[in-house]
Length: 382
Ligand SMILES: Cc1cc2nc3c(=O)[nH]c(=O)nc-3n(C[C@H](O)[C@H](O)[C@H](O)COP(=O)(O)OP(=O)(O)OC[C@H]3O[C@@H](n4cnc5c(N)ncnc54)[C@H](O)[C@@H]3O)c2cc1C
Image (cartoon, rainbow, N blue to C red; front, side):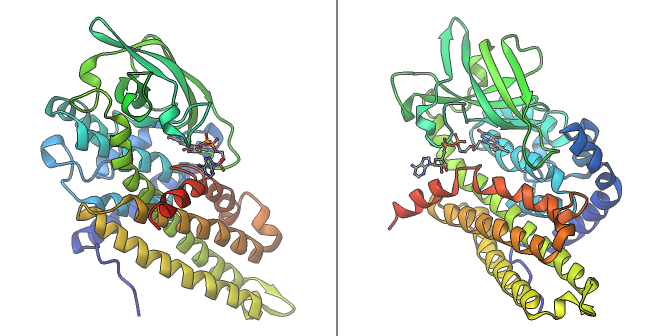
């Protein structure tokens, strides 16, 4: 029996068919170059914009397809299957930055930024984490001082996805340093021509080599007050808490898709590879390992689909999203290890997809809130 996600539609089937073909034939051949360059080129972003894969849930009046979060989920999944190099950059752009602009942007802000984000002319990033810490967001130290008709930003951020490519960066900063949560606001920094804003190194990661990850520095960088997200100062922490379930689900979507893909490519490999005169799938250990992983992938898929339905209905809560993020990414990492093992020595060679998926998987348990923080949030609901 073939399982079908409850949120899939015939329209999405058609979109995904041509999208996957486009990824496999047009963009995937460039992935190796991106891994060497440590970033995806701008042309690829523009090409995704052209085909309708950027911010597909943005309403038509702002240039989007007017889809639902189902479209966002489909794009992340298809990238994870066919072109994992772009999955994380696009998940941040579509699944986080565009969501903040749609949720908290004024009419003027939406008209100014969303069409460019849909076309791939404005690449989005979100800068919460600082060198001093990422888990304790309320303790962040970047300041935004009001001076005349500007906010003056000072501080630094690190590990920022799309940090090198980004044109539009949501910066979490303290507009009131005497307060913790209540002192945080979200400011949209437009990178071009911003004096006082500087990109640091494109960081040298153990995996996800095509996804640029950077330090960012603000030395008296000016941001006009009309670039603040939300009508009032001090709403930033609450805005992040509202949006984090979607961000965490975007990570879980990638995790389940990657798990499914690893089970598939490993099944193909072990059917093809011989030892002791027979295909290695005929060893019970191999078959049982894949049987277990296939079962877990489907369990993850069904739970994930339920969470995606909840997002579409506007009902996904923090605790459920945390469960999805922690469990699916733990399973992704375990599956990567088990599938690499079944590849033998070839699994350790970077030219094999499973080797890249093994190192790429590891960060999924760390970003978007570590899996320990997920358990803290779940435990509070006990
Ligand atoms: C490749 C990559 C991309 C990223 N992209 C972005 C991005 O685009 N934007 C962004 O803002 N950030 C980004 N991050 C940062 C990421 O979200 C943080 O690394 C993460 O939230 C953890 O923060 P930290 O690294 O400061 O770890 P710390 O907060 O220092 O945590 C260290 C350890 O202590 C544990 N710990 C901390 N507090 C608790 C607690 N209360 N209970 C139990 N254990 C605890 C953690 O789980 C972890 O194991 C990215 C990180 C990476 C590696």
